[in-house]
Image (cartoon, rainbow, N blue to C red):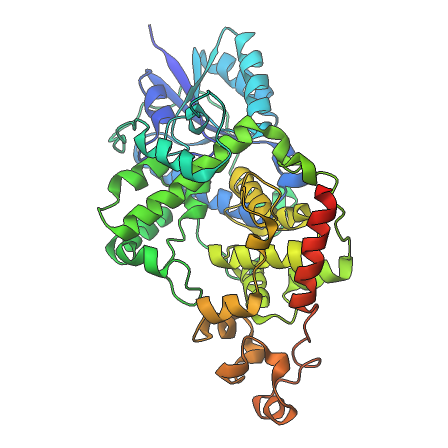
Length: 467
């Protein structure tokens, strides 16, 4: 008797090391399907930049599937309705998918599982989105979830690993008569591309980036990853988010070097924040630390807009925010600098920054983005006192962009400013401003706040919240 199975592709848009795809491919007929869920195109998940990257990924995986005699089936609508209807149409006995951890993803899976059960079809979840099979299964000695990274990292390194799967050489064809929509254009989804220089999406682009990094970059990653003006970071995060490359496969291919060990540690951070959100789903909307849930944040819209647009008067902050506007991506060190500036120097609610990042980031991952914003905002699982997470932007620039190449790339008004004034251009004498063609307050803004004063106010704000 002929069998049919569905692989519901979500954040695993690849053929290499895809457990859900390979499990479904054991059937006589295979239906790879992607549901364009209208609920993910609106509200807190709405993002023109990330949706375009996703559409690029879909075109890429469809080309790969066609080379093997299959194709991606596109359905637009709520997955619980579309998948149940598709399963009935093709006579599928199972729908296979990669497990995820976010509150919406888990609620969606429950709805799909119930709808499929009514058709006598199973929803079977597989690993593949993280390095370990289930980041939340790594527990403390008393059985609770970890809230501190370092001990989680130690346990994570000891956790068992599955062997990565090879790319399939062939796949079963589609059942006859399967209906599919076209992969839509971004505009047809009511969205537009806000970025001027977005990265290319897809498994082929992701693997090319991985190969380049492994060939030249990984061994120096521990020393170069924080240097803003140097291409020492992996830039793999968008491809990991959409599963264009497998995190387990990435780890498996890393050499034995200090740089590779540091990248492996960064992959652990991704798994760590996944287990934090899985075990504490209310973190999606509120502070992990209960004592800060009543914190009084500034709602100064003009300051927030200046931060968003890269007009704060602090060059390294402005460079990072303009990089976000241009590329939909920021170097991790830059993310920490701008996050500290928003929450500590401006005293603005971390949720405002989190939402802005999720709107523009092509790698906008709910667990990692939320975890990092709560970390730099000193309200999350990190146990360090707030004073440890207040970054002086001038010193950060001097340390991580010492030659000024990063700032000058994204803030061209400062191109002719002498090195000794670049981190604090407002200290330039009038004649130097004239010679550099950069008049502070005219060609480039004066500082939005005084960092030393803002730091004192931030510490007072946290102290008041604790009391």
